[in-house]
Length: 395
Ligand SMILES: [Zn+2]
Image (cartoon, rainbow, N blue to C red; front, side, top):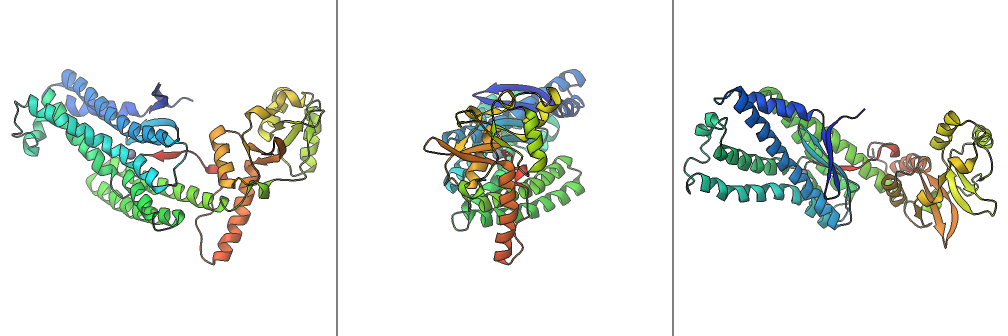
């Protein structure tokens, strides 16, 4: 099911507008339509206002995404939701200076927009700032369609967007800045933990404020901060555990190998009699040519049955990312995430030593994570499944 209202690609980044965005437009039409301009003009003006507001939000996300690109980090997509935008970065730089640059770029875009629009508003107001930001006067007049009102609206919302995002509520931009600054003096996981605690505190305050003032948007943001912070802490903790191990440690040395010409029936038999879920495929010359992964096997059994040949079903070696024996498992895990492949080939001097699967990594993570926690003699970070790692959302 497609949940997006619109999808388009700009500057090499996919932008997805969630269906619930319709609610934002309806909200704009309703608020402004009830104003002095009447339902038709006011309603249309309300829609225009919301579109422009979200254009500013989108530019904020592009600020993050394009800065990340400078550091070689690509953005899978920018998602627009009624409570704001999210840029899904493929990973987070662990160099604090890079994270600071990426994070700061978002609010900076809004500050620059406000600065650029201010002289325009002054010009439209006859060259003077009189009454421009008089909140009492604005209360009624802001609903009136007009260039000056629109400019005032855009300047104030851009300032608000910048300030709100700079709240130290991880994973909002301000919280990320806090984490990056803490990471100069603390280990990365510890810095994240502290930023998440600060974020949760602010989320609770936001929620209380939201409940008492009826600001539903704020409640949603509080929820996003609370849940998002926890998820990211888990991802950071997992990575810290995985970084301690090498690809060589996770490599199964006595994995069962199958051959291109064999039929799926052989693998179904093997799967029943062993714990192995993914099978390296060799050609008759003994060369590694691909992997028969469990998901592919299951799909093929359903579609073509046990008589299909392995070579027609396997994931070819050309689509399998590679690493060396000394690569750390966090890097291997990252390669899986980036390529969408559940296996990585461990290669040394053009010789394939074997494969590592996402199950292997989950195993290392669960077992060794428990060992490390026990050794540290204190309750560790929440034990997360390595299967849940995704992209890193930048609000
Ligand atoms: Zn942001």
